Length: 635
Image (cartoon, rainbow, N blue to C red; front, side, top):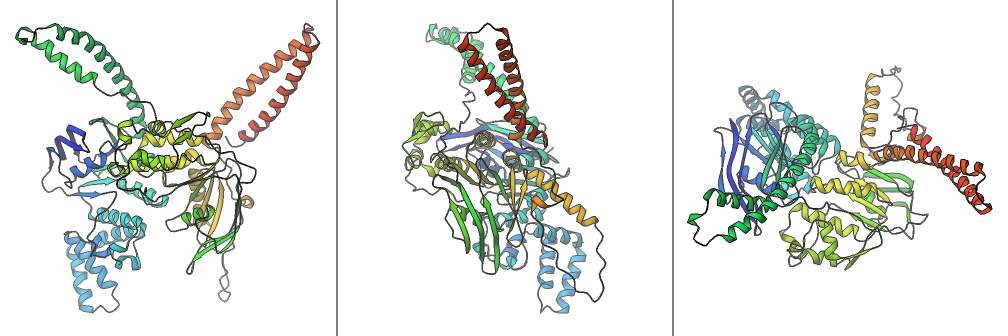
């Protein structure tokens, strides 16, 4: 029996139907991920199911005594409350007992009577174990100390999201509905949340673009496509396979319906207006065929292909950067010379200084000391977390024309702003829509377009995956794999990082940056090994009178004996496979040239040409062979 059911739901928004007569059910223990392109109505459907927005028609029913909690992308709070009051605002008696207990214990002036009273309440509701869980949740989400007393009106966007997440997790509802729960969380917190949600007893409905999160948490994928739902019993990998099969079958069915419709349309037109003599079954079948033939087939994929500005020998040279705010050092003595085609992932806890470093590299923020020297040909493309800034009267095409009327593509051709928008899945009709009417994901896609239209050769992407649909993410990854400039990525999307990053810059306490060769998963595996070694290492015996020595400063990664063997990136594995084929082809060409030279059939000019070609082939074989051997060490 369903805990939550929806029957015949319909919703119209901005003069178009998001879905019509949609049916949906959620049973105990189901962990369902809702996927679909930006603007398909995912967030609207979640809000309707959570009872926060009414449908135009249809009904949502919740089983008696079932508690439903909802986490939105933009949490709404009572702005008059502080963080502690917001988190414990539930009417749950156990939570109320924990709230009173924590309040008394943290008050240095509490009376013995108050302490006795709240301890008895904790006993009454058997809340001690629950209290430990609450503390763990608050600790992992960084909601501690003075932050509990801060008014929610003073919180940043990321802090608001974490407070809202803490509230729904602490409430332990029967049904949990989450809209992009991983946004604004650092990677370590996402991994903790992943483990917490992947429990058999939990009933969950979520929207997320994080494909590792989908794979490890969801046991069913529901796709919202053109107002209809398609269910897939399995994780994200299974969904990708079965979706491709469904689209192929659907294409065949729609083409058949369109061919049949042309024949049936002639038959309908030949009939007299008095239709009583027509075969009713055939007429009904005609209208069913007509509806099927109107189905929109999958359009061409979003293709990101823009010209990259030529990059000179000098890109960016960073020397001894230092930055602190008040007494907190966020960057301490960082030096690095950026090289062509650098692909760097920048990671660290929230507030560690990632955005600070990026702003210094782009000149938006000056260091306290040190130098950032950018080459004359370096052209930045900086995609930030800041939401798209626009005038309410602006339309989609106006946003693009502010930057360029004409865009030069990678192949040298030029397209108009309108044509370029179509590459980004903004059809002509939508280009004259007010930007305010776009969904959150569509605004982010438009913001990305504005960055790429400048033809950058040094691309910085600060949380680019937030609010983008999975289809757009896959296409963006393909573009970035072929991007010829430098790339720095800050992202909590581990799948995205693993596919694109070849080096990790990890921000550590004290403003140090550890440079690690490999992708994010490589770094996490190395970090786990280091933690395990530290835990297993017995403490050194010291004389009781001797002072405890400070731990030594870690040596650079390149000199560390514990540095793991570097693993090949996704791009390097593809390069390795291609090199094997190219070397084989060059060996075959070399053999042909040798046979021609030994045959004695060529004239003087042909012999000279063959000899020159043989020399070039040998040089190619040497260079490609060296690169193949280099890659073979870690593939």
